[in-house]
Length: 229
Image (cartoon, rainbow, N blue to C red):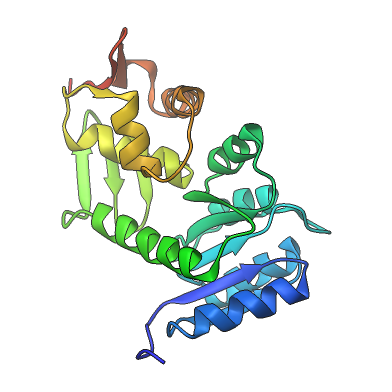
C-alpha cells in the first residue's frame, strides 16, 4: 500500500456492494474513505468531516445526487470539496444537470477501478493547479477571496456557487481578455468533462444577475470578457 495521503474521499451510493468495491480500491491508494447510503446521510457526513472529495451517485433514496450536490455547494465549509457525479445515467441532460448543480466532473458507470483512480488523481491535480498564489483580487468594485471562495461587490457579500465563482475568477484574472467558450469549458470544467455551450451561457447569465450586466461583456461570435472599468 502507498503511504497515507492527507486527503479524504466520501462515497455516497445506495448500493452496498458498490460502496464496498470502490472503498477497497480507493483505500489501496492511501486515501481515507468514508461512505454513506443516501444523499441526506452524505450531507451530514460532509458537515462533520469536510472531505477533500465527494463521489455522488445520482439515483438514491431520500435525496438524489444532483440535489445533494446543490446542497453541498450551499454549505459554509472551510473549503469546498471536489465533487464528482458517479452515475450509470449517460444522457447529456443528466450530465448537464450535474455540472450545473456544481459538480466538477461527471463520471459514467460502470468504470474500472484503475481508470476511476486516475480520474480522481486528475481532478485533484486540476483543482490544485487552478488555485492561484494570490488569495484576494479586486476589480471594478468586485472582491474575491480565492482561499475562502467568497465574493463581494461594493462591500456587499455575493453568494456564488463553486462554478460561478471559478468563472468569475477566470474572467477577472485577465480583465479585457476575451475567453472563448472552448477555453472556458476546458479551464473550468476540464477537458475530460462533456459540457455544452448552453452550460457556459447559463453560468454567465447567472453571474451577471449577481454582479451586474456591465461587468461581463459578450463579444459576439467569440466569447466573454471582464470589463475593468
